[in-house]
Length: 240
Image (cartoon, rainbow, N blue to C red):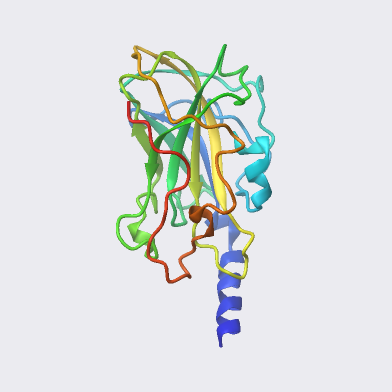
C-alpha cells in the first residue's frame, strides 16, 4: 500500500506540467505591470521549467537562471526607494496565472559596479524579502505565496542609489521522497535603477553560487514528512 501511494503521488507530480509550472517574468511597480514579458526581466532558456537538480546550487546559473547573461537586450527600469516592486506570474498555458505550488518566496538584490545590463551577478547579494508559512507548512494554504498572482515588497528607504539585479525566487515544497534529488526552484532576474535612495548598508552579504547548500533544512523538508517546522534558507532579510 505504501508503494502504491508513492507511485500515485509521483504520477500526480508528473501530471499536467502545463498547469503546474509558471514564469516569474513580468516586472511589477506600485501595483502595475511595467512593460511586456521579459522586457525588464532577463530571458532564460529553460523557459517555464524549474531547476530540479542540486547541481544548480554550485552553478553560476543560480544567479539569474539558465541561458541568461549580461548585454542580452534587457531594459533597466527606474524606481524610487520606497516604491513597491515585484514580479508577476504567468502559468505555462496562460490559465490560472498564479503560483501553483506551496513553498517560500524570496527577493535578493545585487548592486552593479557599472550598469545592470553589463553585470553578471558575480558580486555581493543580499536578501531583501521573504515569505514563508503561517501555521502548519504541510497545508498548502498556509504559505504566503500560494495562489498569488504576484510577489511584491517595498524597497527600503535607505537602500543606496544605483543599478541592481533583482532576483525573484520561489521554491516548491510539494516534492516527495520518491524524488530525493528534487529541489524545485523557479527564479528570474529583473534589472532596475534605484533613485532617491539613502545611505544604508545592506547585509548580510552572500555570493551566488554559495547561497545555498544541499543539506540546508529548507531543501530537505517536504510536506510528506512528519516535521511541522520549515526553516527558511538563505541569509537574514535586510530591512533597511
